[in-house]
Image (cartoon, rainbow, N blue to C red; front, side, top):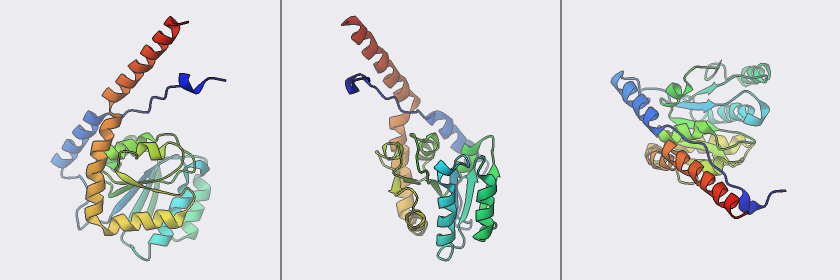
Length: 219
């Protein structure tokens, strides 16, 4: 095995400048975040695989619907679980409020218009889509699976138990009902994203190289 003292982890980075430019472009086009007259939009970027928990999202959407019938959900991604998830969506009567458009070339453009971003994974690494949401000022509801708590360690979101549609629906409903909290989390997320910027990624990578060089030099 490898001694823990010799292991270094470099988390994903997020292009803060690209997201800032995306937001400027969308504001100019008048297509930025939803206004008070729009239906709230909950966005999930995930492959349609069991591990991603999209079935949990569907159950949460059904649970939340009586309280917030105006909420709209969209899952950006594709995969082998599509037939089963489409059947579940139909069985729950959600075809009018949950979209499964499959792969889209620029999911960040949709994410930038989101009211809330969700990541209901049963297992996950750091999740680049969560970092994208933070950089765009979109509050996040994610599970405690894998590296998701690390992604939200500096703020910007709420954590729920993997596999719990009740907790997911409750957290999303809370944020939909509390605009001030959404704004607070969105602002905190923008700050938090700075910990995962490209500059930080480069710095952490260089630190690994220095560590390796120093280790080799002592052998």
